[in-house]
Length: 102
Ligand code: FES
Image (cartoon, rainbow, N blue to C red; front, top):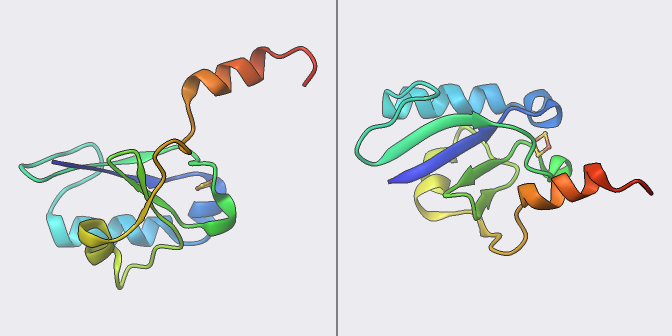
């Protein structure tokens, strides 16, 4: 099952994440927060790549940058960039927030 997360951060919203979600919903019949045999669909927070908005994460380590409604389903099935080792780690965020020098 593919875990598909559409970024709902500010930059991605401005650059069309809502249209991406609408297209995925239209193609799959899923709504955010729902899943079926092959896909689990939902929104997510900022993925950390705002300069390439709008973005989608597939199975957490594959990111589709500058996604477009016209190609989003094909990109979910076959595209994206492998971001293994480069995705945001919640532990790093916690360390950043707790750092008194920042
Ligand atoms: S707002 Fe989507 S990656 Fe930052």
